[in-house]
Structures are given as structure tokens and as C-alpha cells.
Length: 308
Image (cartoon, rainbow, N blue to C red):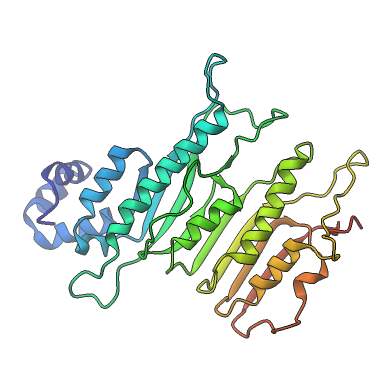
């Protein structure tokens, strides 16, 4: 508490009732209690000034031990004027890339154990997006799904043990980049909106990328995985079910789910929304499902990858 900048301490005290504020200004024990509650849950945006404040306030390793949840909101561009030269997709991807790279560069500085602790402090990271005036119903609109503009790798961040991604629909291949930069993560919740059937190419690309992510990303440390994905059934006879089988008659997404089921430390697996899967997901050839698995929930479509 002694090292809190005066302006931050003043802001904390201004939120208290006057009797408490007077008491907090002189009672050291009460000051530490306020500090614990103040820095337990932090919410910031992806702007450079906000990240600089985060770096300044939590530069003290002792204070980082108080952090339990960091909520990070990325402000994404909405509709643009018709005279704007760059496509909206490019601007949104660039804003997403800058915000995430700045955050991970900042958090990578915390990869050491403060004196007096046996291991580095850890906390949950919540990534979310904030957008206004975006027409997601436009026929050619691919703006919802975020991709890194130029980034292929992020700095390793060892202090995050849980990752939650909601209201920010990150392309599966780019989620791989994020997950691989969090070597100590053991809990993942990921919400991803699928493309409508009229955007067939994007829909197929998302599904194939999801399969690749489940097949290749290192999830060996994860104990809980929750993925929400809406691969909805055709609503009427105007839509023909897709055929997702490869040349050998296998569905890659089902094979990816099968790999996840066999992760050595996995205890809880939730696949919600709707998944079009085949019996390949329960293939036990090579190795069995480990005894660590305690809870399994999969929301499976009535349609199979073979159009049945």
C-alpha cells in the first residue's frame, strides 16, 4: 500500500463513505484490506495508456499476487464511411492484433517469482470485444471473426492459468497462437460464432481451422475445456447438409475431438452449442480415454458429417 501512487489511493478513498475514508487514511491494516479488494479483479481496455497503467500499477510483484482476474476489452471499429479506403476487416484485425500483442508484451514482464513465493502468482484472463454499429447480417460480412494481421507468435506469459474468450470471435488458428503463449493455462472457455450457411466458404474454413486447432495445439496441461460452437442443422429443405468427410472417409473435426478426449490431465470437457460429429470421436485405437476424465458433455447435431 505504501507504494500506491497518491492519485490511485485518492481515487480509492473517494469511493468510500466519509467515516471509512478517514479510518482508512490512518489504519494500516484497513489499507491493506482495501488494497486486496481493489486489485483482486481488474478491468481495462486495449488502449496503450490503459496497458501502461496496468504495467505501472502491477510492477510491484507483491501486488500482482493479489490479482485474480484480468478483464481485457478490445474496442473494435464499427461501420466506416463509404469514402474510407481500407476494408473494415483489415482495420478490425489490426486493432485486435495491436491490443493483444501489447497485452502479452506487458504480461511477459511478470514471468518471475516474487521474493517470498514458491511459484509465480497466477490469475484468470478474460478477453472480450466491444463493437458498435456492425451489420453482421450483411451477405458478404466476414468482420465478426478476428485474425492476427501480421503476428505469428506471442511472448510467453506464465502468470495466466485460466483463459476465457467471449464476445470476441477469434479465428481458431489464431486461438492456437494465444493458447501456445500460455504454457501454465489449465482451464479454457472459448465461445466462437459460426458463419451462416450462405457464407459457405467461410463456414468451411472455420470448421477446418477448428479441426486443425484441436488436432495440433498443445493442450496437454488443460484440466477443463469448454468450447461453444454453433454448427446448426439446416432449418428447411432449401439447405442441403454438408459433406465433411475427407478422401479416406474421416471427419477431421471428429478426430480432433477424439484427441481432446485423450488428453492426459483433462477432467472436464464441454462442447456446447452444436457440433456435427461422427462416431470417429470415440475411436479408441492407439490409446484409451484416460481415467482423469470426470465430466463429459457434447451437444451433437442430428446431422452427420456424411450428410446423413
